[in-house]
Length: 335
Ligand code: TYM
Image 1 (cartoon, protein in one colour):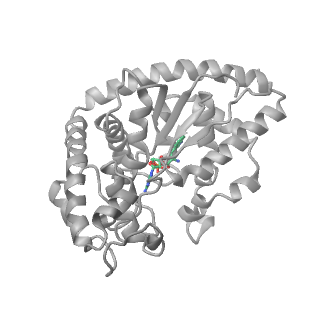
Image 2: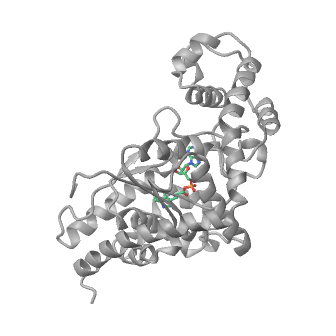
Image 3: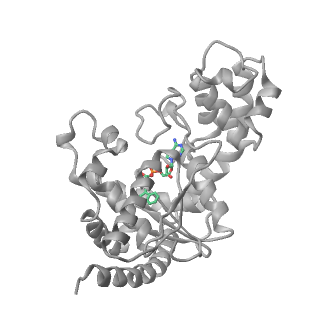
């Protein structure tokens, strides 16, 4: 690593429906990191438009995602919070990295395959080169640590490959640090409540697959009641959960929110019906998520304040981005 200073960067797409997966997989970690490190958190609007977005809705979602950061506990005086398109250096470095990354590397990206679906020819070019822009987001600030959910791990590996190739090609040893993913250990992937093999996602058609941060207590208890499980009772050991993805998911969520190891949760609930766990889970989810949702709704109605937060963040981010891009342009040989 080129320097020893820890710099944290992460991004979230403003595509609506912030959910429990974002909260447990990313936001919670963002908040704990801001206590000890310099952190930059970005609403990645240029990533969002790789799939068509209604322009009016996109603007609202940019502000809502900003509100989601703040409602989860981020402090705009401690962390830099801004939206990606307001710092044009992201796009410029994105282009430079398009010329560093190899086609073969992008061809391996599973998220592109998932998102493009069966008709790849119809996907936007932006969606294909999305991981290069993500690498640019991180490397523009020479970030050293990136808190993300497990679904972003492959993109982070690509980012490290790009950083390494840039450093080698331009004989600039250690110029870009190789960023480390920070992935939550016990709940790196929150799964859909309707299918334990699919991740909880804002794009799942049915709202019953996810707990949204804006859900009411009533919504949460209904969704947990309806959540898919199997007919067996809660087992004694983690091993017995291997082929029971829905059961494992509910237990993992409960374990994470109550800060109790899965082993201990199993000790306390073994042999009981899932309805027992579901009741406890609803209670703790309501306790944790509803205050965040309430704050999120309050903040969303104060557009001026949210715009102020983004403006302040943009000024700070721009300064760093300009300085680093200047060096990058020199290294590449651009006049
Ligand atoms: P996005 O917007 O899909 O998700 C934001 C964050 O939430 C995490 N996450 C989950 N974690 C656990 N379980 C889930 N079901 C779940 N769903 C979402 C994601 O892993 C992510 O951390 N490509 C990124 C955005 C991005 C970015 C970056 C991230 C753009 N540039 C630079 C880090 C650094 C994305 O689409 O996240």
